[in-house]
Image 1 (cartoon, helix red, strand yellow):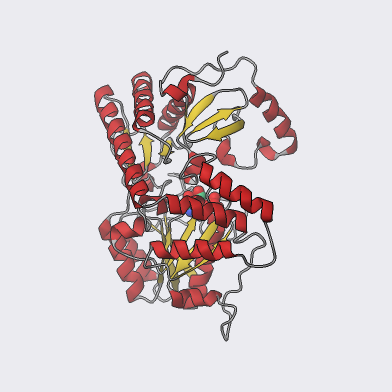
Image 2 (tube, helix red, strand yellow; image 1 turned 90 degrees about the vertical axis):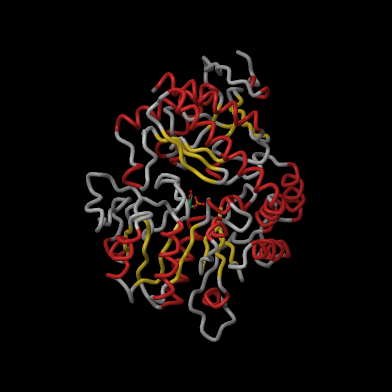
Length: 450
Ligand SMILES: Cc1ncc(COP(=O)(O)O)c(C=O)c1O
């Protein structure tokens, strides 16, 4: 079998499936020592998950020697792809100086200064270790600031693994209830009812129904939590009308607007909020701001961030974390973000336009029952003729799921790695040729699958 596949030339030739798979052997061992053989469910999207040998730029090579173009980018966390030389160099230099101390480092100050300079809404910032932690800390800060217990979130939106935000993350037609009063649906068996009782579930982009639901809990809501282009809700940008309504409702009712920009921060230099001319009172960040290392952050208005100030007369929200702001993450993250400057953001968004237009045209040419959503440097393929407007519309039927899986397998065989929802996230090493190769592979997939 030919190793080091032909993808370097961007051709969309069939990638041979290895006859003996080192990944299969490794997975058999993994299943003995890890539940289901994995540490992250997201990597288990095929019966035998491929194991990585190495990545370079926008390509990854698995341990069976097959190279693919990486449109997953570790679910949007690698803005410069793999092993970006300036990050490798700076993070390695920091590693040689030590990776974790019970002392602060200049690296954290430098990264904080850089991120705060990107948005007028970021007066101050606190670093944590994941997007989950960032959202959790933002909600706790909102409760500490307002003295209120409840949070509102969009039905189907993914915000990490905190009990409250897991509510209605995976609702289905069998349990989601009436659209003007969505049920609070647990994700995890044993999820406390008490946590769910403090969550108000609102429908995406539906101003009237959302406002009516918020009004029912006015005075109890600490915040409205919003992702401006929620991936699991369909990767459709929030309407300006919806965002304005949420912003105005929170101001009027003494609640905070908490934006989850863990993924969407890549869409503008100052995050997706810049495109709506608003600021969150608090913003949760993560993924790409760690330059490939685990990270999260909570940024926002100085008066709100004061709840975290250990020097305040009364500390409202004590927050520590053993590896928070460790200098390796801070160094890698700062380099990643400094290199993702205004021209880099614009270039990647233009590639995003190219891929979305290319897929739309491929759907048109093949007359396939499919549609494409996205914005900035992200896109998602739906096996539905009409572009879904919200979580309920985006929810795939059994047949759509079957066709989506076939498409993912087709793309994988053709040398493209996607997020399991058939979503793609671009990285700066990608070229127009990489984009066009993916579009060609999608077109052949649509012809095959329909
Ligand atoms: C919008 C959003 N928020 C929060 C998270 C949680 O981030 P992490 O996986 O780093 O905990 C994710 C992860 O995919 C996300 O997409």
